[in-house]
Length: 213
Length: 126
Ligand SMILES: Nc1nc2c(ncn2[C@@H]2O[C@H](COP(=O)(O)OP(=O)(O)O)[C@@H](O)[C@H]2O)c(=O)[nH]1
Ligand SMILES: [Mg+2]
Image 1 (cartoon, rainbow over the protein chains, first blue to last red):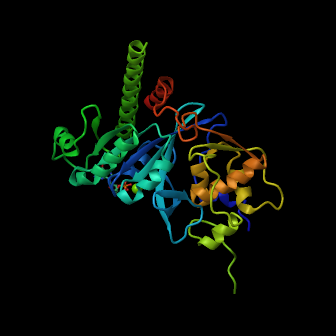
Image 2 (image 1 turned 120 degrees about the vertical axis):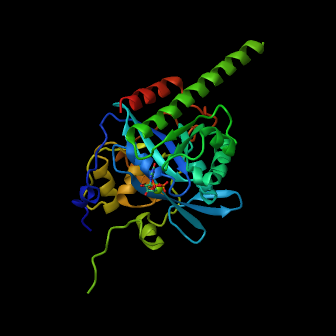
Image 3 (image 1 turned 30 degrees about the vertical axis):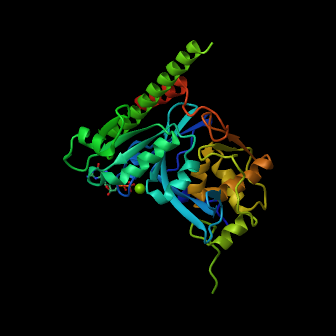
């Protein structure tokens, strides 16, 4: 089999990273079907979003086994991703992941080590995000919520917040996933939120040190 | 008339993928993250399994595990098995993510402020 000439042909526009790139980072964009995940990733990515898949075998009750080769007991989940070169060393990968309940056993593995997550919601189908938000809270993954505006918004953000039962300290922002600047602002909002969380946990740590002899 | 065998890929059945991995079905544990950057230490050797040769060509520049999987059109876990072989043979090096609680149990769940500052600066320059 001769594939030597097809590596680049398979993926036109393949843009190699700088030779100095040495630190990959992850942010996950999670949400229901057709909520705009791929669109958002594509808006800010320096490459056309690529698609790949992971296979997981349910080896037994409570035991998830990453299995390379799919069989009857396995589930295959497709996800897409894009990439942003941040500096000579740092490269940020954005993953678009379906939020449906049946896929969650995979995310714990796939996305542990992510800096944080953006929950993308469509106000016409808010209830689809309840499980996702529960799960992120349970997992301890920091996140923000972005409402993707399909047309004129019919609900205020405060209504969305209460429908999602979102704590006050979790940012909720509006976006147009098709717009690069808007998508970029969503990511910036997440990173600022992470910054706030880290500072808060450092203050808490310092306070604890003061009170423990 | 027989068709030329296509390269292994996503649409292949389990049999073909088992052949690619030499019958193994489990990737090495906690060695590669999705965003571990892989760099080839040289070009392919003559007669090398074609999937391994393709990985080495792709990784002439640093390439994330997940990008290799997308390019080869194979599940991530299959690619991790192949990368494990190449790593063991010294044909690739792996640049691991610095923030990676998965690889260090008990590690902080939050990135440090310096990392966040770098991410913010990078995003603001977009
Ligand atoms: N009007 C409008 N359409 C959008 C917006 N974001 C995404 N879409 C469209 O909605 C559809 C689903 O988007 P996609 O990104 O594929 O959703 P995914 O399933 O979450 O990845 C596509 O046809 C997009 O073009 C938006 O902000 N406004
Ligand atoms: Mg999509």
